[in-house]
Image (cartoon, rainbow, N blue to C red; front, side, top):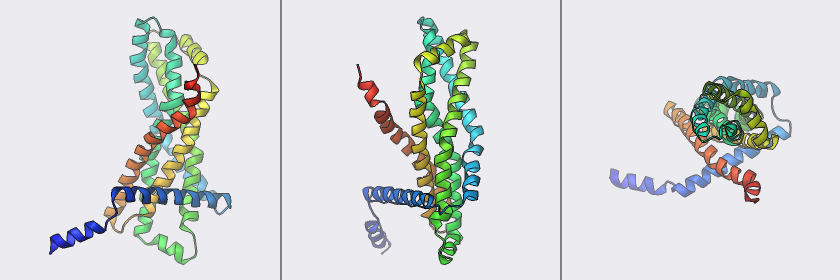
Amino acid sequence: MNEAGTATRSDTRPGMLAQGMIFVGDSWGIALQGIACALRGRISAKDTVRQMAAIGVDSLPIIIATSVSTGAVLAYYMTGVLLQLGAGSFTGGTIALTFLLELGPVLAAVMVAARSGAAIAAEIGTMVVTEQVDALRSMAVSPVAYLVAPRLVACVAMMPLCGLVSNAAGIGGAIVMASAHGLPVATFLESMQMMASEQDLLKGLIKTVWFGLTIAAVACRQGMRTERGAAGVGRATTSSVVLCVVLIFISDFFLAQMLMGASVAQP
């Protein structure tokens, strides 16, 4: 009897493809509703500023620590190899391009997803479990306008700042490590000026905007779809971080093709 009942229940569950389509639809729906609320002015400026501090400013210490360490390790390997090949003058430009286009935006997004994305999902999920979201609906207050829109705007607005800090910290760590291995700081900076440009910085910042939208939409969606119980909050928090990180790397591939495809195709 139990086996039959289990089989019946499993048959009624949607498949992986259907679950993926539901997830994408829910995430886009929440994101579009949040954007609409922001454009209509149905958003609390006080809550938005508070979320900007929680999502962006409070994430800066771990972004700096991660980026400095990554930049130093990258310079540790690259400086020795390029100096042996007689191409040490290309170290600064190579590392700068790597951070401006890829490592800076991605590291910042992953750290924000791990810290702030988890916090958003846990906070909203707890409100769902304790029926606070139902109380908002009973008072004719839109949960999207009250909960989602401030976090969405804050995350999208603060991610470029996080990306800039990640770039600066990573390149700073690389300069220190390259200098310790015998590469003059002036040579490093000259290589940066020769190989990197403002357009490269702008392309990376465009990525951070999309990453911020992805993190906020996924975290809010997972929080709003939390099942009842403390275990549901834990599952929502864990799935939020995992989905955000996976989507960041997947979307980074396509963004790189879109932003760099034309220049790479040129002879």
